[in-house]
Each structure stands twice: as C-alpha cells, then as structure tokens.
Image (cartoon, rainbow over all chains, first blue to last red):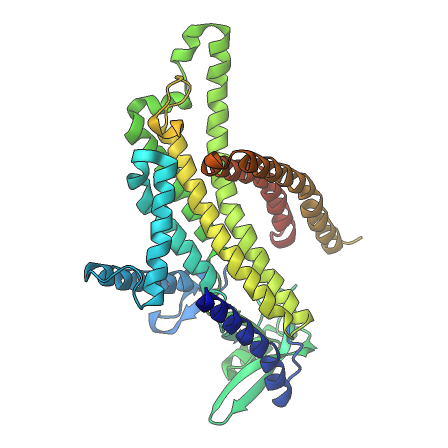
Length: 351
Length: 77
C-alpha cells in the first residue's frame, strides 16, 4: 500500500514539475509559451518517406506500425519471463502489468462466456492491448507535436511564422503562435515552389510524425469490421447453419402471424449488426479524437499546469475505451454463440 | 450568415442537442444498475455486463450526433 502511495506522489511530482518547465524553457528561448494551436485534422496527414521514392504514408499508419512492433516486443518479453518459470509477482513491473491485465481479461472472458471463454480470449486480449497501447502512445512527449514543417494543405488552417531555436549544437524549428502569416503561396504558385525549393515555408504548420492511431477512422473502422466479421465466424462455429436463422428466419414463417413478425425482426437484426460496426468505429474515434482536441485547445489556452491534469484524464479515457471495445466484442461474440429464440439456455447464460 | 458560420453552428448544435438524451439515458442506466448491485451484490458481474451493453447502445445515439457534427465540420459539402 505504501508503494502505491509513493508511486502516486511520484506521478504528482512529475506533473507539477512538467507544468512550468515548458513555459520557462520557451520564454527563456524567446518564444511565446502561448503556442500555435496544433492542426486539428480528422483525416490522417500524409508524410513522404524519403527512402521509398517519396511515396506517401499517413502518420497514423506509421504510428500503427510502431505500436505493433512495441506490442510484439512487450508480449514476447513478458512471455519469455513466464516461460522461464519465474514467479508471478516478479521484480519486473512491466511484465507484471502485462500478466495482471491478461489474467483479468481471461477471468472476465470465463465469467461472461463460460466454457467458450478460452476461445474468445485471444481476440479480445489482442484488441485490448493494441487499443490501449495505441491510446497511450500518443500521450508520450513528442507525439502529435514533433513533425514536418510544411505549408498547410487546406486554406482554412492558419499558417504561422517559422522560428529557429538553438540549444547548443542542437537546433530545430518551431512555429510562432503569435505571428499568423497570411497564405501567399496559394495566390502565387510559383512563389510557393520557390519556397519549397529553399526548404522552408513562409506560412507553416507542423505535420506530426506520430499521431494517435485511434484518431484515424481507417484504424477504428478496420477494427470494427474485423470484430463484427469474427462475431459471425464465432456464431457459425458455435451453432452451424442455424446461426443465420437469426437474420432470415424461414422456419418461423410456418408459425402463422407471430412468425411473420419474427421473420421481419430478422431484418432488424441485420440493421443492428451494421449499426454495431458504425458505433464500434465511431465510439473509439470520437472519444480519442475528442481527447486530442481537448489537449490541443487546453494547452493553447493555458499552457501552465493544467494540460498535465488533462493528460492524466486521457490516460484514464484511453484505458476505459480499450476496455469498452474489448468487453463489447466479448459480449457480442457471446450473444452470437448462445442460441437465439429457441428458448434454450446455454450453461453460460445460467450464471 | 455565411456557409462556414452556419456549419460551425450546426456542428455545435448537433452534438450539443444530441448528447442530452444519451446523457440522461446513461445516467438512468447506471443508477438502475448500481441500485441493483447494491441490493444483490452476488450478481454484480452479470449486471455489469448488461449495463455496459445498455450503455453502449445508448451511447451509440450520441455517436450518431457526433458523426453528423464531424461531417459538418470536416467534410466539404
């Protein structure tokens, strides 16, 4: 218990330390701490890859690859430790955490789905860890703030004056939030070309290299489609062809007027299945994107202390959304595997 | 009112009005679930599962409003 309190006090100390440090750093370097509002863009921004013939790759895709690699490393690490037969509460905190989360998920899968829990667990745990890591990865320093200096692609996004900052031998560019530069490049395309050739834009935005993966609809929609497709697969595996009676209930037609209503309700099931894809995708996107916008706006309005608290909130929201996605996937799979409308009760539904 | 102002206003109204109903709904759902858990803690796990399911369906309505609002803000019409 004392260790928990020490950890919480440590996090609070880091938060209080991080609150003013950027402010003093920026004023010391002669840049207003009231920085430019980062670009709020729903579609992922494309980045050119220098060693691939400048083919474009979106920044969320790049982040997804990094998160995938990180996830593989983390799990391999935890697995190797478990294979070596070390005791569960070992010295390594990260491996302990992975094991604790995995065990909690496994127990929950068993309690929801009974004997099918073992079959559902791998998918649900993968979803949980991928979304959790993706949501937390965007909270690291440098994510969504370090990037490419370039002219904004859209006319509605304001551009700011670039400013060179030197820290000893290390120097980098930032944008000066107090100096908004009207766009000249669009009016004179030739001037824009010349500016690009010089390698520095006049009216700039920062396109981040790393952006939260769940702020891209491509990622969340892909996860939603995979999950709902696998729900059908699990349903067919558990019930065989009878699973499709849920959607097109021909045997019910023989039961007279009530059966016709049941047949029509089958079509509602199809619509409900499609709406689950939409709500899966947009629930994750909406929560994480809203969190990103919240942090952008708060750190633009009040760059002291307050953003640190909102980062804490985002840690919480990221974990909750990962858990909600995983739990809903588990519940939908369980609903598909348990028979529908026959009045039969599987052992899972009994407890 | 020009188009940009109308779109910003519409986006704000869409999510603002659209969040009222689901907000009340999720509050009622959680109220009911917590009361049930307090009366019968043995089935808390089962109630939690059903509560999350209900909250997810209720929240979906707010998500439709969010989609409308995002389309208004970010998709060129």
